[in-house]
Image 1 (tube, rainbow, N blue to C red):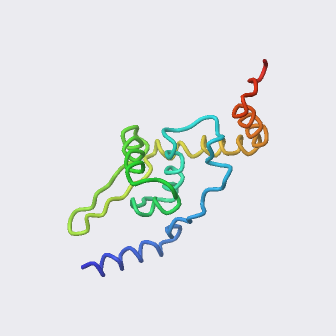
Image 2 (cartoon, one colour):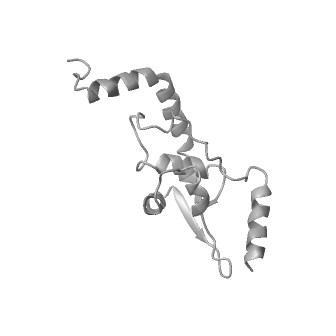
Image 3 (cartoon, rainbow, N blue to C red):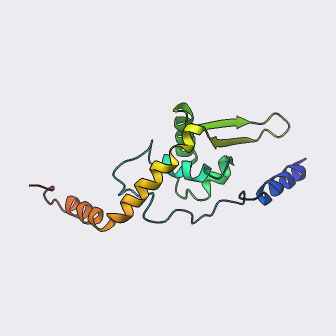
Amino acid sequence: MREAEREREREREREPGRGPLDPEMFDPVCPSPLVPFRIGDKWASMIVRCLEGGPRRFSELKVPLRGITSKSLTQSLRALERDGFVVRTQQAPPERRVEYALTLLGHGLLGPLDAACDWTREHWDELIDAQEAGLAGGSSAGS
């Protein structure tokens, strides 16, 4: 039975646009702690990005989200589901596969996320300078 499940998983990965997630899919600029606005918690925008190509399993999401704990991923997915951005689908036995996918509302976040990343790239040096000034105890803008 396990071999049949593995074969089905391999077949799914061969579907166009459905290969494994790239462990290096997130560039250092975006998402970044320097982005001055967030969707959900620390991990939500990255989870949305991981799901933009279609449904994913929990274990698939952990690959590019290095550093996330299982507990944090579960909490983030539940919050995204509660807010209507993600849907959780559980297959009937014997597979018992659980997948997460973006809803229409969740797909609507992709445009604003792109805009946020573009803005962050455009203002990257200013954001770093402001963060360093704040960490050094410098004054805020306009003082």
